[in-house]
Length: 122
Image (tube, rainbow, N blue to C red; front, side, top):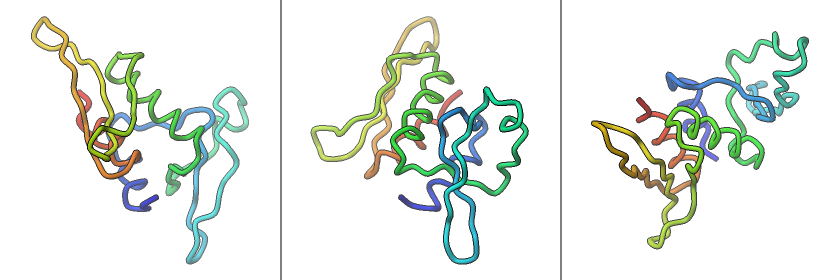
C-alpha cells in the first residue's frame, strides 16, 4: 500500500472514518496500527484520528471504503474488482441528467481505483 495514496483518502471531501476501519499513525519512521474505529462506542467516537491514514491492506478497511464509495454515489451495487486487462476497476452507477450511467475508475491497485472513485464523487 502506498502511504501517499492513503493520505489522499483522508483529504477527499467525502472522507470520514467508519466503524471497522483500521487507522495507522506515524510513530517516528514507522506507521503503527491504532485500535479499530468503533463509532458505536461513545468513548471511541470522540477519539482524535488527526494525522491517521487508513490501512488499505486491511480487508475490513477496504470494505468500509467501498461502502463509503457506494454511499456517496447512492449505488449499493458499487464494486471493485480486477478487470480483464489486469488493472483494478471500481464501478458505480450514477444518476445524471435524468438517466443512469455506469462510471468506471481504473488503476494499478485496488486502493487506487477506490481513491479515483471517491475523488470524482459529486
